[in-house]
Length: 345
Image 1 (spheres, rainbow, N blue to C red):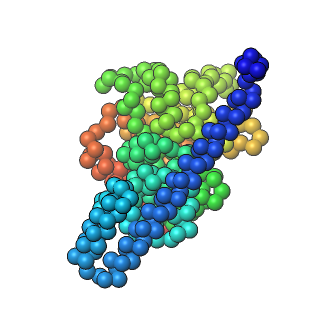
Image 2: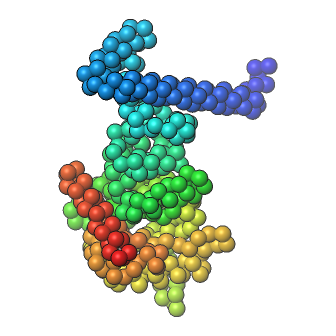
Image 3: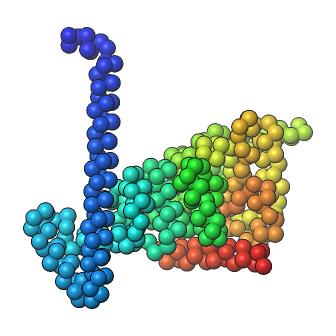
């Protein structure tokens, strides 16, 4: 019997798969039950504190409640944790939304987002985490890297952000504004102060896995220096990717300096060629991404690149101090929204 099993492991593998799936389902169910319990506890404490209305009373209630719960149920109900539960219930007052969140996000995920003041930012991370199934570690890294502030959607009006996130939630369909970022962090490439476009391209290919992690999991690498021939002339597309959820090709052009007006014509040529010769039925038109060390925002604004399906983004091979980076991103968001407001007037 033993020999028969060793010769044919099909039944063994099937049973092991069933066991693993069952364990995962149990873990998900336990996590959801625990998170709902924490929300209910937080809601009940908030009601008690709010009913009395005295801050001192609230502190005493939490302190005494924690003392008794820790004695009976352990350190999970320490005062600090009770306050987190209260914050959870305050940030998510609607039980239906809580039920949706805890289906796919663990309590540890939730702890990372409840301090966020901006509800749209919080919703962005929730929906992207559900979509890409981020681990807790990846989730924290995305927040730490200010992914929301670097994503194009953050520079749009609030109503547009709400609509895009609602569409993502309802249909699981993503828009380019939720995919493309600015700037991109390429500090993992290990490039020196002086490097060529070829050095940059080679470093990206050497670290293609980390490059795709920074760009997003739905990018699939297709080609380096993709050769195209137009009127007997050779042209090269630096990097060619396919994005699964956008269902289209993405051509990336790597530039060492700041954005130049001539780059638009080059990319338009590449995109039109790809659309004519490489796009297959059912795919969306290709998108172009020009990566530069500087953007020259007025050039970009005047050239109406969005109409050509072209995006321009900076890349950073060395990250500045965090305070400077935060200020840079906040300023970029503010300027983008000012331009949108001016266009509407």
